[in-house]
Structure formats: C-alpha cells, structure tokens
Image 1 (tube, rainbow over the protein chains, first blue to last red):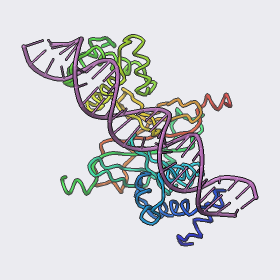
Image 2 (image 1 turned 180 degrees about the vertical axis):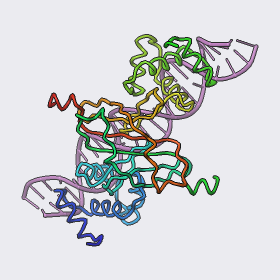
Image 3 (image 1 turned 30 degrees about the horizontal axis):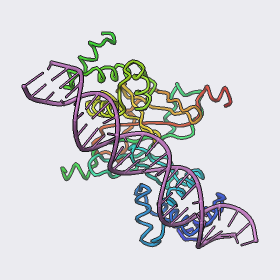
Image 4 (image 1 turned 90 degrees about the vertical axis):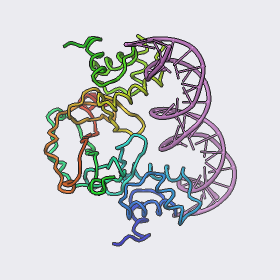
Length: 140
Length: 140
DNA sequence: GTTCCTGCAAAAGCTTTGCAGAAGA
DNA sequence: TCTTCTGCAAAGCTTTTGCAGGAAC
C-alpha cells in the first residue's frame, strides 16, 4: 500500500486514535521524512500546508503517537527531542559539527548483559557521536 | 590514592581547573556516588554540608567538568540530565517503574557499523529501558 | 592586587496545561 | 448531538546568563 491519506487513516484507526486532518498530516510527514525532526521542525514544515497548525497540537499529537508506539523519541541531546517513524531497531550517529543524524544497522540480539539477566528489557538504544564523513571531507 | 581532598585538588589542578571549595565538593560527591544524580540531586545533597551552594554554581561546575572530560552526561530522558564520574565505557539501564539507573558492562569494540566506516566516532552510548529485577519481584 | 568564581535574580528554551470554540463521527 | 481535538495564551521546568561581591593565589 502506498503512502496515501487512506493508509494513514487506517493506521490511526487500528490504534484507536481518532482521526483529524492535523494528525494525518503529522503522521504522513514523519513517515515520509526520515530526517529525525524536532517538534519545531515538524511544525514549521507542516505549517506550509496547514498554516493554522499550532505548537501545542504538534506536541500533543507526537505524544499521542509515542504512547501508541507509532513513533520513537530520540534523546541524544538533552535540549531537543527528535522523533522518528521507523520503529525497526537501528543505531543513531550524530555529527558534532553539522548536527545531522545518521541511521546505522545494528544487531540488537548481541546485547545480553549478564547484569540484566532477570530484568525485563523493553527498549534498546545505541547512539554514537563524532564527525561525519562529509564534514571530515570538507574539513569544516 | 584514597578519596581525599588532596586527590581531588590534584585532579582539578592537572586539568587546569582553578580550585575552589565548591568544585572540590562537587567532584568528591560524584566520585563517591555512582547513583547518576541530576543537577538538582547534586545541589540538595551537597547543600547539607555547604548550605550556601547555589544552583548556578552546580550547573557551571558540572559543565566545566564535562568539558574537561571528568564527567559524562547521561541523556536517557529528555527532561533530565544525569551525571556520572565513571568515564569507563558501560551501558545504562533505566527502570521505567522506579526510575533507578543500573550500569552494565558492554564490549564497545563489537560496534563497527559498515555505514560509519569513514566517520570519526568520539563517543558511544548504549541505554536500555524496562523493568528492573526488584520492581518485577515486588510486582509494583 | 588581580583574576575569576560564586550566588542571586532574571532570562531563555522547550514542553505542558487550561479553556473556549471548532471539528469529527 | 456528543465527544474530543485544536489553537491560543499562560504556566512549568530545567538550564543559562549578567552582574556585583567575594574567594583564591
């Protein structure tokens, strides 16, 4: 199924989330943009199409989606939450120069720390920081 | 060398950080308490001994220490930065019930993602979330 | 004596909340 | 029609900043 309004309406419906124009647009945006946007990014981008969209709606909607497991929070930096649609396990690399976040594949099954043998693990996160290839090349 | 005032003075001195009563106390506290405290935790604990200590001094000092690589920030949750003295690589597990953070050992050398082959990696972080052994046992 | 640290208060940023009106089913 | 979502403004929190007085050497 391609990325149509119907598809996103269906996803929300199956999660028991009531439909609205705003919610569908926000879900659509995150599904089609894997740039790990902040709430502010989401707002300013969608405002181009939906000028009345408000910041509080964005925050409320993002939190609704996170509770429904449609989105994932990325908290690499303390002063900004980033969001992504892709729920599949992968790691994140944040470039300390340009700020861009890159995904990378990782086998999460290799983590079975002895110390956590009797713990219930719900969520595994891996993030690296450093300088990305393109900043190294440009010697910025 | 045991954890004496002289030892912490020496550490600061070697990093080129000017000495002060507050700085030594804060470093001492973090070196002796591996509970991953927030800035607020550090403030309220050290205030018992140093009642005039202010929040801004705590923040400024913690940031000074991070720049000097004496401390490490842990950003698992977006709304709270936690600090730890231990620079050695290890993972963190945060219990979603009781909020406690547990350390676990991890071999960071196993992470060599293909996608990051030409990247410069400065920092590797791994954190899990879930329910800890003791909350599972107490069925809280 | 000079440097720069501390502590107070105020400012800054991001996120959440309260509430009236509007949209959705 | 009834529920609940949206958008505005205000509040809440954590962290940062400006500045005068004080500590360190």
